[in-house]
Image (cartoon, one colour):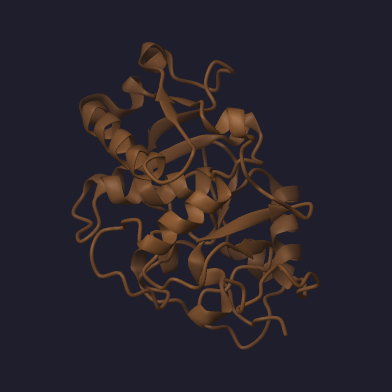
Length: 266
């Protein structure tokens, strides 16, 4: 049976626990909850997940309302969870997974530039240690970091957004492939760190969904467009603590996160 709640966007990410509406959200309610980025026009749902335009937002709503119709998707009893698009895992081809190039905008980060470079490198190292993926910093492009075809994605700073950071899935078009870090992420966000936030966001860039969309979480349901790679992990790096998560420290990879990443990118 379809769950009757969803992750209430940035309220769930930044401000506190998720609430459970009395019934399924209407399209109008769903759209009203989405945050629209002023500079890109993209919509953010579930705290930090990208819908590049209104059509993509409508697709996200249809996934939210859809009943489970595939025995391998959205099932609690399946032994991290990967996004699904068109009935297939949303992952990078093997060759591309080993060459995930990026630039870091020196202009937008200014004095914070070196801290961000270090945070992204440390977060990337965590995933690279457990899966056949490789992030490559093209530092020579940092002074003019933009939506160039020379890299897979950009890392840049934004301000006054609804999130600490947001990223994208492998299926996202190049125009939407940005890891955006809000200025609020540089304030006191203890027990999280900037590196921990980026570890979570890089999980999305590999195709991993929020762990709390699984029925075992009992809160913050998003949709059923996913496939389980391991048993449910309430301490996962991809699980919001305020959505019945059990990780009380920084956002770090658990043994099950490592197992799931290795299964998707062996």
